[in-house]
Length: 513
Image 1 (cartoon, rainbow, N blue to C red):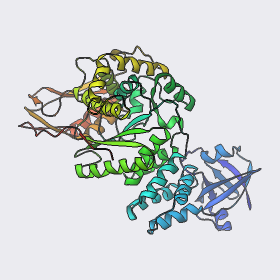
Image 2: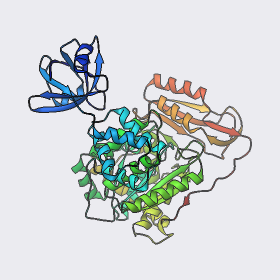
Image 3: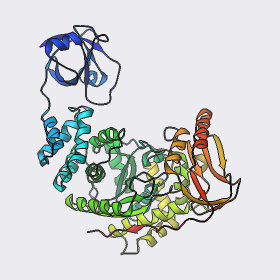
Image 4: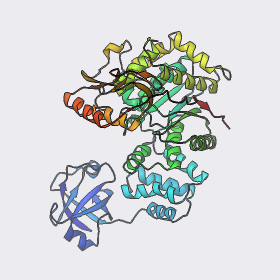
């Protein structure tokens, strides 16, 4: 062992614990960058990954980053002993998989456990996901991956059933159907503990939008109390430690846009199983700018979800929806919350496309949950909406989560700085450039700034005259509005042509098997 003096490094890496060794000390112990060492402090032993420096840390000292400092809090000047540590066995398993060997259930579980406990470096974890591209995951491996992800965190259990849920694979701006579906379904007497994500690259996630109306960072017991009291919740999944390994894997997937199918399937259904869900619908948008470009690809993915759900003891139904344009008018947390309230309160200017899609999906859930006969779900969902019961249930959920149940559209924190982009010519709206919409909305501050985003004034197929408003940019800060306007000048988010574009089929429901 080598005794070294502590030097705390005020840097958080966000992954596995890291230490810095001076080049001379590393050489003396035969340690290289990315090797592991055991750090001994009193009776504690923690494993960390090594980085090597010739200047930042002097010989005889060790730099401790924040992740390790939280485990063994030592003031500068204290001492620890270090020794080389063996490489985790899961590194060998990842290498085996890259070379073509499919892993057993216990081996998949070992890799996932090492990822969630930060025993693997980010590079090693990425190679595990990348192995899905070199050797296709078997059904057994995907089931094992999903179950291991469920076991990485807390699990919800409710006596009242059936427990229902829904999920969209994402990629479409707006699309806040969850916040309309949940109160409709709960008003019908079904239980729906909805845990949702925050935005990673989009202008808003469901959790970001719900946070405009009520807190979403619910502790595990608070979430359970909310569901027991109201029959539902709309909370951020990260706050209740459901499938924590998934948050880490999503962060690692993002830079390279890795989206291997088994990890997509496991990511979604693990969260549903951890929430206790028994009946689930999966929304798969298809379109030029969506994650899924072709209907045939969507159909294959839909059946994969259905089959995996059956293996996990859940009844899954997949639907293929339009993914070639935003859903709703608002893009950004407060603007999307406005659309939700307008639909639930039946305002005249509520976006019809968001209303229709929400009722379609709520109807399917009501049929799955036994509250409506086959083909009768939409009518029941619409009845619950028109009667005001859905809005009343949403108010109950908002109150239970600590928000203001009397919230009105005028109370929402829309950005005070705004600018309207007008059409430069006459024509018909042919399509929307979704990536451009996302860039502009994020430049305006969304999702961090709740009031930032885009308000669309036109829909596909609408005839537009020169000078008519196309969309308005909202921002909380003047400099961000300027940035968004500059971005809008570079993009063409509303694509025009002289004639009305062809009509694309509406939602296509896939049969469950």
